[in-house]
Image (cartoon, rainbow, N blue to C red; front, side, top):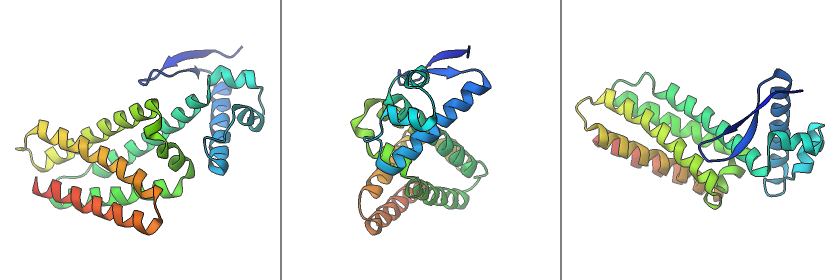
Length: 210
Protein backbone atom coordinates (compact mmCIF):
# COMPACT_ATOMS: atom_id res chain seq x y z
CA UNK A 1 0.00 0.00 0.00
CA UNK A 2 1.27 3.47 -0.83
CA UNK A 3 2.14 5.56 2.19
CA UNK A 4 0.57 8.98 1.89
CA UNK A 5 0.86 11.67 4.54
CA UNK A 6 -1.81 14.29 5.04
CA UNK A 7 -0.47 17.84 4.94
CA UNK A 8 -2.10 21.19 5.55
CA UNK A 9 -1.00 24.24 3.60
CA UNK A 10 -0.91 27.83 4.89
CA UNK A 11 -4.26 28.38 3.20
CA UNK A 12 -5.89 25.61 5.24
CA UNK A 13 -6.36 23.32 2.23
CA UNK A 14 -5.64 19.69 3.06
CA UNK A 15 -4.38 17.19 0.51
CA UNK A 16 -2.49 13.93 0.78
CA UNK A 17 1.23 14.21 0.21
CA UNK A 18 2.84 11.07 -1.29
CA UNK A 19 5.96 9.71 0.36
CA UNK A 20 6.80 6.91 -2.10
CA UNK A 21 8.28 7.36 -5.57
CA UNK A 22 5.38 5.68 -7.36
CA UNK A 23 2.88 7.91 -5.61
CA UNK A 24 4.93 11.04 -6.32
CA UNK A 25 5.05 10.09 -9.99
CA UNK A 26 1.27 9.66 -9.96
CA UNK A 27 0.82 13.11 -8.44
CA UNK A 28 3.04 14.59 -11.16
CA UNK A 29 0.97 12.83 -13.80
CA UNK A 30 -2.25 14.15 -12.27
CA UNK A 31 -0.95 17.71 -12.21
CA UNK A 32 0.36 17.40 -15.75
CA UNK A 33 -3.02 16.19 -16.99
CA UNK A 34 -4.81 18.95 -15.09
CA UNK A 35 -2.50 21.54 -16.64
CA UNK A 36 -3.25 20.18 -20.11
CA UNK A 37 -7.00 20.33 -19.51
CA UNK A 38 -6.84 23.83 -18.07
CA UNK A 39 -4.70 24.95 -20.99
CA UNK A 40 -7.30 23.63 -23.44
CA UNK A 41 -10.56 24.70 -21.84
CA UNK A 42 -9.85 26.63 -18.63
CA UNK A 43 -10.12 25.65 -14.99
CA UNK A 44 -13.88 26.22 -14.86
CA UNK A 45 -14.43 23.50 -17.47
CA UNK A 46 -12.01 21.03 -15.93
CA UNK A 47 -13.69 18.10 -14.21
CA UNK A 48 -12.15 15.68 -11.76
CA UNK A 49 -13.43 12.77 -13.85
CA UNK A 50 -11.60 14.16 -16.88
CA UNK A 51 -8.37 14.43 -14.91
CA UNK A 52 -8.70 10.86 -13.64
CA UNK A 53 -9.44 9.53 -17.13
CA UNK A 54 -6.49 11.32 -18.72
CA UNK A 55 -4.18 10.24 -15.89
CA UNK A 56 -5.31 6.63 -16.25
CA UNK A 57 -6.47 6.25 -12.65
CA UNK A 58 -9.78 5.75 -10.90
CA UNK A 59 -11.67 8.73 -9.56
CA UNK A 60 -11.25 7.24 -6.09
CA UNK A 61 -7.47 7.21 -6.49
CA UNK A 62 -7.56 10.82 -7.63
CA UNK A 63 -9.47 11.85 -4.51
CA UNK A 64 -6.80 10.17 -2.36
CA UNK A 65 -4.37 12.83 -3.53
CA UNK A 66 -6.63 15.81 -4.19
CA UNK A 67 -9.99 16.10 -2.37
CA UNK A 68 -11.42 18.49 -4.96
CA UNK A 69 -10.61 20.54 -8.04
CA UNK A 70 -9.64 23.50 -5.92
CA UNK A 71 -6.85 21.49 -4.30
CA UNK A 72 -5.36 20.78 -7.73
CA UNK A 73 -5.57 24.42 -8.76
CA UNK A 74 -4.03 25.63 -5.51
CA UNK A 75 -1.18 23.14 -5.86
CA UNK A 76 -0.48 24.37 -9.38
CA UNK A 77 -0.64 27.97 -8.18
CA UNK A 78 1.82 27.27 -5.38
CA UNK A 79 4.20 25.63 -7.84
CA UNK A 80 4.12 28.63 -10.16
CA UNK A 81 4.77 30.83 -7.15
CA UNK A 82 7.79 28.79 -6.09
CA UNK A 83 9.20 29.05 -9.62
CA UNK A 84 8.63 32.80 -9.53
CA UNK A 85 10.24 33.13 -6.10
CA UNK A 86 13.35 31.31 -7.30
CA UNK A 87 13.51 33.54 -10.36
CA UNK A 88 13.22 36.72 -8.26
CA UNK A 89 15.73 35.56 -5.65
CA UNK A 90 18.24 34.64 -8.34
CA UNK A 91 17.67 37.88 -10.23
CA UNK A 92 18.30 40.04 -7.17
CA UNK A 93 21.04 37.96 -5.54
CA UNK A 94 23.95 39.96 -6.96
CA UNK A 95 22.44 43.43 -6.61
CA UNK A 96 24.86 45.76 -4.82
CA UNK A 97 24.19 49.24 -6.21
CA UNK A 98 21.36 51.37 -7.57
CA UNK A 99 22.12 50.73 -11.21
CA UNK A 100 22.27 47.01 -10.59
CA UNK A 101 18.93 47.17 -8.77
CA UNK A 102 17.33 49.19 -11.56
CA UNK A 103 18.56 46.81 -14.24
CA UNK A 104 17.81 43.58 -12.36
CA UNK A 105 14.30 44.52 -11.25
CA UNK A 106 13.39 45.90 -14.66
CA UNK A 107 14.47 42.62 -16.23
CA UNK A 108 12.50 40.64 -13.67
CA UNK A 109 9.32 42.52 -14.55
CA UNK A 110 9.82 41.61 -18.21
CA UNK A 111 10.54 37.97 -17.36
CA UNK A 112 7.50 37.70 -15.09
CA UNK A 113 5.22 39.24 -17.68
CA UNK A 114 6.58 36.84 -20.29
CA UNK A 115 5.78 33.94 -17.94
CA UNK A 116 2.17 35.07 -17.68
CA UNK A 117 1.88 35.44 -21.44
CA UNK A 118 3.50 32.08 -22.18
CA UNK A 119 1.63 29.96 -19.63
CA UNK A 120 -2.12 29.64 -20.26
CA UNK A 121 -2.52 27.70 -17.02
CA UNK A 122 -0.86 30.47 -15.03
CA UNK A 123 -3.07 33.06 -16.72
CA UNK A 124 -6.20 31.06 -16.02
CA UNK A 125 -5.39 30.47 -12.37
CA UNK A 126 -4.47 34.04 -11.53
CA UNK A 127 -7.28 35.62 -13.51
CA UNK A 128 -9.60 34.07 -10.95
CA UNK A 129 -7.59 35.00 -7.88
CA UNK A 130 -9.97 37.66 -6.57
CA UNK A 131 -12.90 35.23 -6.62
CA UNK A 132 -11.13 32.55 -4.57
CA UNK A 133 -10.06 33.31 -1.00
CA UNK A 134 -7.57 30.46 -0.90
CA UNK A 135 -5.86 31.77 -4.03
CA UNK A 136 -5.89 35.29 -2.60
CA UNK A 137 -4.13 33.99 0.51
CA UNK A 138 -1.54 32.22 -1.65
CA UNK A 139 -1.06 35.40 -3.67
CA UNK A 140 -0.61 37.46 -0.50
CA UNK A 141 1.93 35.04 0.98
CA UNK A 142 3.83 35.06 -2.31
CA UNK A 143 4.00 38.87 -2.32
CA UNK A 144 5.31 38.86 1.27
CA UNK A 145 8.07 36.39 0.40
CA UNK A 146 9.11 38.25 -2.73
CA UNK A 147 8.79 41.59 -0.96
CA UNK A 148 11.23 40.43 1.70
CA UNK A 149 13.72 39.43 -1.02
CA UNK A 150 13.37 42.81 -2.70
CA UNK A 151 13.71 44.66 0.62
CA UNK A 152 16.93 42.76 1.34
CA UNK A 153 18.36 43.75 -2.04
CA UNK A 154 17.41 47.39 -1.49
CA UNK A 155 19.00 47.31 1.96
CA UNK A 156 22.25 46.14 0.41
CA UNK A 157 22.11 49.10 -1.96
CA UNK A 158 21.27 51.57 0.82
CA UNK A 159 22.29 50.20 4.24
CA UNK A 160 21.21 53.43 5.95
CA UNK A 161 17.61 53.19 4.74
CA UNK A 162 14.84 52.47 7.23
CA UNK A 163 14.37 48.69 7.01
CA UNK A 164 10.71 48.75 8.04
CA UNK A 165 10.00 51.29 5.32
CA UNK A 166 11.83 49.16 2.75
CA UNK A 167 9.88 46.06 3.76
CA UNK A 168 6.52 47.85 3.57
CA UNK A 169 7.16 49.49 0.21
CA UNK A 170 8.71 46.31 -1.24
CA UNK A 171 5.68 44.25 -0.17
CA UNK A 172 3.44 46.83 -1.84
CA UNK A 173 5.57 46.85 -5.00
CA UNK A 174 5.28 43.08 -5.32
CA UNK A 175 1.55 43.00 -4.62
CA UNK A 176 0.95 45.77 -7.15
CA UNK A 177 3.09 43.83 -9.59
CA UNK A 178 0.80 40.79 -9.29
CA UNK A 179 -2.25 43.01 -9.79
CA UNK A 180 -0.63 44.65 -12.82
CA UNK A 181 0.09 41.28 -14.43
CA UNK A 182 -3.49 40.11 -13.92
CA UNK A 183 -4.78 43.35 -15.42
CA UNK A 184 -2.35 43.18 -18.33
CA UNK A 185 -3.43 39.69 -19.37
CA UNK A 186 -7.12 40.62 -19.13
CA UNK A 187 -6.90 43.31 -21.83
CA UNK A 188 -5.59 43.39 -25.38
CA UNK A 189 -1.88 42.63 -25.66
CA UNK A 190 -0.94 46.14 -26.82
CA UNK A 191 -2.65 47.75 -23.83
CA UNK A 192 -1.21 45.12 -21.51
CA UNK A 193 2.32 45.93 -22.68
CA UNK A 194 1.71 49.62 -21.97
CA UNK A 195 0.39 48.87 -18.47
CA UNK A 196 3.42 46.77 -17.60
CA UNK A 197 5.77 49.48 -18.86
CA UNK A 198 3.97 52.08 -16.75
CA UNK A 199 4.25 49.85 -13.69
CA UNK A 200 7.95 49.37 -14.37
CA UNK A 201 8.58 53.11 -14.58
CA UNK A 202 6.60 53.79 -11.41
CA UNK A 203 8.34 51.23 -9.23
CA UNK A 204 11.81 51.93 -10.57
CA UNK A 205 11.31 55.64 -9.86
CA UNK A 206 10.14 54.78 -6.35
CA UNK A 207 13.16 52.59 -5.68
CA UNK A 208 15.73 54.91 -7.26
CA UNK A 209 14.44 57.95 -5.42
CA UNK A 210 13.75 56.18 -2.18
